[in-house]
Length: 123
Image (cartoon, rainbow, N blue to C red; front, side, top):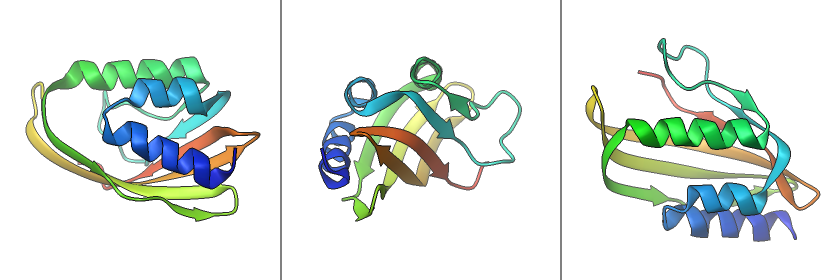
């Protein structure tokens, strides 16, 4: 699969809220997930390996009380890299309602996503 094909499939699944399916279908077993520096204590940080990425997703979902809306931009593709803008309007346990916006950058190798990195201002 080309990087563009994988990018379009990731966007399709994320727009449907099928993040776990996207990980199972598109991610390599040794993929890494990188969060920005300066996260508050207890925040979900960077991890390595698909099992750790799945667990990170489960922990994130456990903190969500309600999702009010989400959007995912069309991908921008350059070689084996692509990026999307993701937005999430959600209510989190102990935090209230938050409008999150981030730039997500992915690297594809061997028909799988091997690297994801998120850019946002922690707060």
